[in-house]
Length: 222
Image (cartoon, rainbow, N blue to C red; front, side):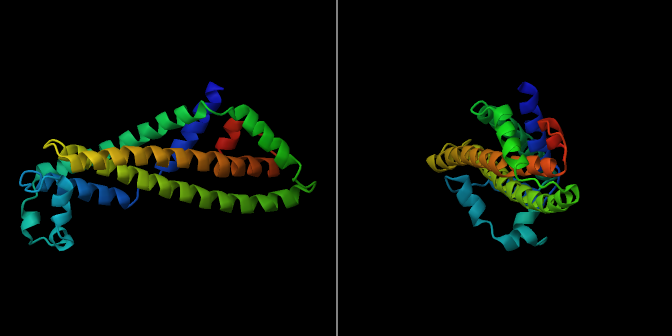
């Protein structure tokens, strides 16, 4: 059972962290803006300061905002962006391990396999042709799951910014940070439910129609 959960977890994380996207740039810019405005913050909430920075000031190399950017800010922005991705991955692993304690995956896979085998045709060629549709569907479902976790990582970055704002304690940044934590939990729960109810069945179905002897570890490698 432990090996099954480990295989599930590794496949789950691999699918969601195997590519780089522009949202990482957005997270970096968020941290960069926060780091630049912190020393001169006049508002009580750091988020008010971040919101006061116009987009043109960030994009224009001649703006007063850009002139305040130091090499240290860029370095810390990169470190925080990397740390956020690493922390979010740890959260994914921890939440996956937590949620798997509420489900017997061996029994779940056996039920899936038995149900799907009843729908498979006797023609191997036809089954292989149908498998192509499952592969396309699997790609779409993985993309949907990936988008969910993009928002999860962005929310985590916002929570970290709120924590930075609480260095000068204020209720606004504290409440935003707490709301972010609750939202991250909700995202993890939703993503796990989607993975086990939409992606895992498609993986098993593809294996059955490909006439493979499905053990869950092999299904995860499809």
